[in-house]
Structures are given as structure tokens and as C-alpha cells.
Length: 255
Image (cartoon, rainbow, N blue to C red; front, side, top):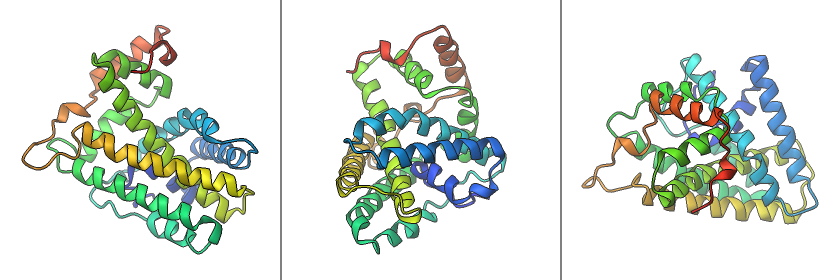
């Protein structure tokens, strides 16, 4: 079981690590993502645009992975230190991945800090997260984006929240890519490895900055509001119904 899956930004990597424990449909999803990552890191062109195109695939697999954990009774936020930290630490033994590994560890520490803070918010629990995530099972990344855009009247706040989600997906991609490059000896040029290092450094800094702006890292004297990240079943079902009517995320301009 994925009992150590306690870091929001590394579900895909952990599912790779526990591939044999997954059911067949989820194995197929994981294999598809890993193949996409291999193609991207082996590309001869700048890879950022390819990573952006892979974000929906990562998001969809993350949701399915969380649902699988819920069904297995393995979703647990009680301990944020998980197995991938030593796995990334080992990458520093590979000279060409040393800087990339350091940047990934920084990103995971940022994620850990946010999740630890979230766990102190009243109402934030494995049960509440599980209920919300279960309702997202049939919602795609595009529908999720549309739902957020329609539900938050403040365009700037909407964009910040979506940028926060996307920064976490960048972290997910790069962490998984680095492990694949090392373990499977995937051919990635020095330029691509350097770009991955820059991408995750930027994503980590944006992730922590936006978490602060969204109120997730406020001091104890200024309590966080549950409403900031609470998407109950009514919200999710309403947004899915709206999305099913034919709205597209592309119809909404960036703030």
C-alpha cells in the first residue's frame, strides 16, 4: 500500500514506486504519464511548453491516485515525511543531477510546510479531503479550471489559485522526471536537465509565495479560513454540470 503517500506534490512519483500494487487501469494511466515524461525530457527543443501541455495529464492522475488511496484506506496527512525525500537525496550522487536534486528537495520542503499548516486548520482532515476528492473523480483538469473560474468572482484571486495548483503540478512533473532520468537512464541533454532545475526552482518559489498570498501560511494570530480551500460536494457537482454544458477553460482570460 502507499502508506507513505503524505506529500501532495508527489502522488505520481509514489505511484511509480508502487506500480505493482496498483490496479490495472491505474497502472495504464501511470505508464502513459511516464511515457509522456520520457518523451519530453528527451526532446531537442525547450521543454517548458511540453511540460505545460502535460499538466492536465498530471492533474487527472493525481486525482485518481488520491481516490485510489482513499478506497484503500491509505490517505493519511498525519506524517508529512515520506519515502521520496531519501529517494531524491540519492540523486545527488549523480553529478549531472546534483543541482536538480537540490532544487527538488527545496520544492518538497515548501510543499511540506504548506501541508503541515493546512493540517492545523479546523475541518481539514483525511475524511474531509477524501469527500471532496471523491467528487472530483469524473472531472478533468479543464473542467476543474472552468469551475474555479466560474465560482470565484475575483479574477485575480482565481488566477492566483490556479497558478498555485499549476506550480504544484510542475513540482510533480520535475520530481518524477528526475527519478526516471536516473533510474531508467533516460537520455536527457544537459540543457534539458538545467531547464528542469530552473523550472522547479521557479515553481517552488511561486508555490510558497502564492500559498502565503492565499492565506495558507498566515501566522497563528490570523487564523486561516476553511472556505479558502473547501470545495464541498455541492460545489463540485455544480461546476461539473456547468462544465458539461460546454464551457472551456480557454474561454476565460488570464488575470
